[in-house]
Image 1: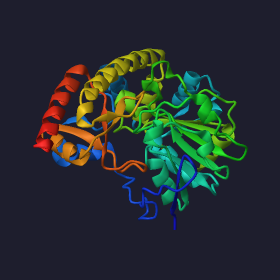
Image 2: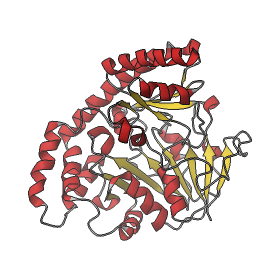
Image 3: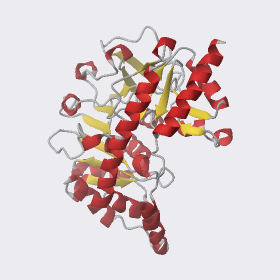
Image 4: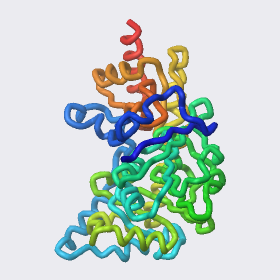
Length: 375
């Protein structure tokens, strides 16, 4: 049965967290995601829980997907989309695998690769660990600390790890780790998985490793669902050495990516789309700065923003965060609970970046929620 060993950055177990052996997820609900905050009775809430860019997919992308409906009678042919993704990153097509979202890629990695000592660097997106557990692996955690700004020290990762998973920028901390620091995790005989699902929301995609072929064992995952609003279509891809791609492909079912998703993938890596994504990244950065500045006004109330934030979301710590989150729901706003992420507790919430009008209204609701909690 899979278990979890907990290591903080000094290499020791975390004495302040007794959840490491409690249940399959060490006491954390690894399968809880932001969409749970807005399902069922939450559909009418203003959504600051899910990290999909608002106003997407854009009209031109909807049209492209609609045009592809005429090909539904034929089996999907991913060659054109695969070539387009390869060209987008300046890579040979043999280094690209299209997947039904990044979540499928995590499952493929967990099931297809021969892994003995996998390590997941937390706090981060929990699906990689969940997939490893489902495949029967024992999972070792390295917990980054709030006191260190949730920044990576490569020396904290055990030398015996033959699979290391890290997000960049990391969900939920919004930390953008230096590419050189992540590359220092590479070792002969080790697979280094970097989840870059939110990298296209970083202006200039600085610190990206997607196009690198000089880092041994590097596997980069990308998602097209966040920037383009395609979570319901399921499209992502893996970039890795040809032999790794071939091994993962053998574990895929036939025709794993639908015709509609293939059309979307090809469209989203075209020059027009890349220019639009680059513009959106700068707009998100400006909107994030506005959100952070507003949240910092609540510092006297004990509100702290983890930073510097570089993704399309921010991680916030506050006393009685669970009660505040519930009160925000009453006031019409959904934010993402933080305690399902290993390394965090119920004092944390994740807040998606939105436009300034939405943020201003949210900040007013937060002010009201805090006052009601204090009363």
